[in-house]
Image (cartoon, rainbow, N blue to C red; front, side):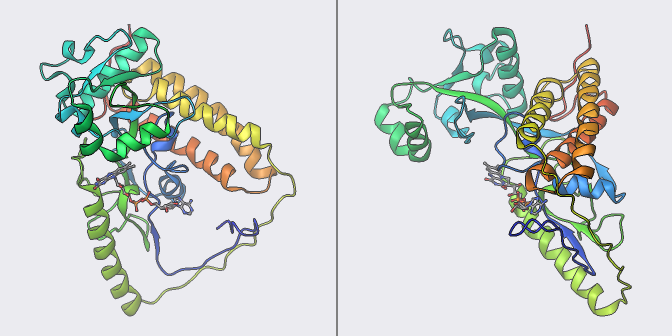
Length: 336
Ligand SMILES: Cc1cc2nc3c(=O)[nH]c(=O)nc-3n(C[C@H](O)[C@H](O)[C@H](O)COP(=O)(O)OP(=O)(O)OC[C@H]3O[C@@H](n4cnc5c(N)ncnc54)[C@H](O)[C@@H]3O)c2cc1C
């Protein structure tokens, strides 16, 4: 484990290890996930031979605030429920041509419609038009969105909200049973990094926190029983030798940006064999670059993020390439 306080790598020997590192949304250019959510647990589990499943199923939330340097915060679907509609830069209600429910269509359909609109127009975002709602109602019913947009210089009582879809939830992950057990002895996984199969190919909103809590409780209960009743033979950890060289932070940042752009463009909302093959080529090249950083340079949180981001991105691309069927949040088109 890298000790943030002094930059040293320390060994922690444990009878049980629980991976609880969250999702991988940040391997995509637009994501609702907190910084650093690049699927660390998934990358680590892969390296120790744990079984991973359903990684192609990444759910995209259709409406996240967009500004070139603004934070990506969720623009709630309740706004569309109250009558707000998605429009393009010309003011057309483009989702109407995709689905009879227009802006109220299911999440994955709306996300695809926005993606398609952004690709064909070349615009960096679309807009949520709130003009059908009373100005007073908007600030009273949606005070959080109102305030956050105001901080970004947009008064949503009179202006549309710029939005993009964003990677939101990782349906797949480290395969576990309902007690958090993976196929690697004494290694467990819980929360968004784990996959019990509960979320299928597309998660229903508001089910994941409950899963986190029940998964954590069941896993803790089983582990306590094991620790009381089993004998453990703990390994002798190897000493870690830290090189003195520091990796160039500009290169690390640029490489991470490249992972995120590659995944967004070629392995995101709409996938095809050719796009996935291109993503794989770019990621394999990055993997070589990261290997040399990892062996020659001191570890830093940024370098670990990059290394694990490249690994999880490759795993998502691999899973997506193996699955030709559009289902849930995995959507594949034929190559021309
Ligand atoms: C904006 C937003 C709104 C949501 N709303 C809802 C909702 O209304 N209802 C619902 O059910 N779900 C919701 N979700 C989903 C839900 O919040 C997540 O699925 C859940 O929080 C995942 O919990 P977790 O503990 O698995 O991971 P996280 O909450 O992501 O926690 C992971 C922790 O591990 C740490 N970590 C990761 N890697 C490392 C590492 N290498 N070393 C050390 N530490 C590490 C992180 O810093 C973090 O503290 C929402 C998600 C988002 C992004």
